[in-house]
Length: 109
Image 1 (tube, rainbow, N blue to C red):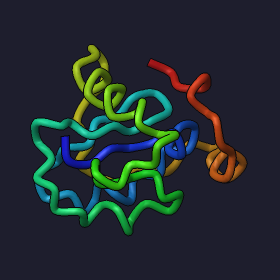
Image 2: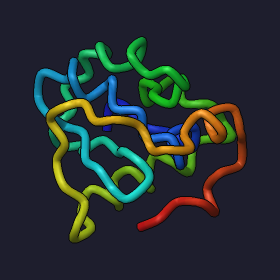
Image 3: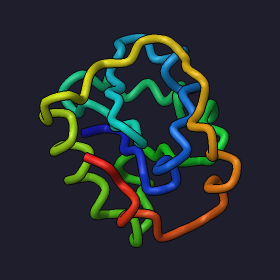
């Protein structure tokens, strides 16, 4: 895997990153986006697009977010998680959640 979406995305799901991805490697769940590790080409154009700084290159992943590497790899295989190729509106309460930390328990699979 080359890039990882972290907990900051949970309950926000801003999709600015999706518009710039040249290989459509983002997948969408109910309240989170993940990256398909087999499709990501390590271009990094998604990183500055995320308004909550939820995307990291694998080698820059903070220690407290290391668990998200395996989670991204797991989620892209789940039924119902589909490739997203166009920007959508964020979740209705995204602004209320964007600065919160420790949101893993809020992830809907």
